[in-house]
Amino acid sequence: MKKQDKQFAVIGLGRFGGSICRELHMLGHEVLAIDHDIVKVEEFVPYSTHAIQGNATEEAFLKSIGIRNFDHVIVAIGEDIQASVLTTLNLKEFGVQTVWAKAQNVYHQKLLDKIGADRVIHPEVDMGMRIAQSMASDHLLDYINLSEEYSVIEIRVNQQMHSRTLQDLRIRPKFNITILAIKRENDINVSPLPSEVIYSGDILVAMGLNSNLKRLEDKLM
Ligand code: ADP
Image 1 (spheres, rainbow, N blue to C red):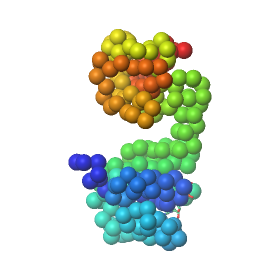
Image 2 (image 1 turned 45 degrees about the vertical axis):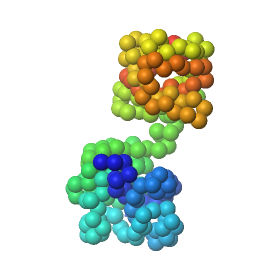
Image 3 (image 1 turned 30 degrees about the vertical axis):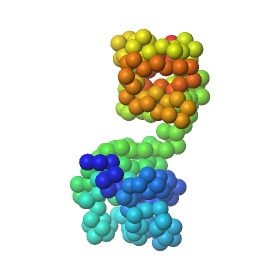
Image 4 (image 1 turned 120 degrees about the vertical axis):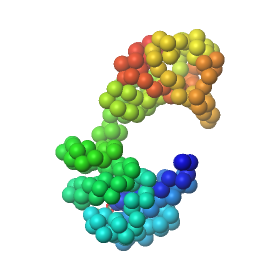
């Protein structure tokens, strides 16, 4: 299925859900915006495909909007943990393929994990970790946790690697790391060939085991 054909729904149009909704809409995706506050719903009419008022904890409401036909639903209900948990549970019971949910704290996070949320996001904690990682390293610009063991990082090429190919640097055989992309000024080269030459200042988007990524980073220190 093409990315563009995916049907998204965002439940809860606060700061977090609202920014997801706007971004998906701006990227050209179909997105249904849901909130029980009519003021929020009206605010998101221009930033969604449809904006609907309703209480997401009510099964009948979710059924009436055909929520089971959506590929990806995000539960971005903040304060009301009970409503967030109940909504997530309903969505999984209805068979929505992918349900992501925002957690307010670690207990909420555990609960959402237990009831089958496909991904639990804890924005402040996730962002704090990312910022700490990039503050702690001059080369590491950004990172995303894929699992406990695997991450994607953005790392700046230094003089030591300047004007060499990926093959020369033996990044895959030596570190078992995959270079997903090379960013150079405003360009991005996705899936670069081993023969690609990299230059000081380029940014490598690298995926691998955390321990191997750390080894690569240490080499760049
Ligand atoms: P944030 O921290 O992301 O701004 P908020 O808690 O302020 O989060 O926003 C959550 C949004 O979710 C609010 O707009 C609220 O009206 C909405 N919301 C809360 N409970 C429900 C519910 N049961 N059904 C639909 N929307 C809800």
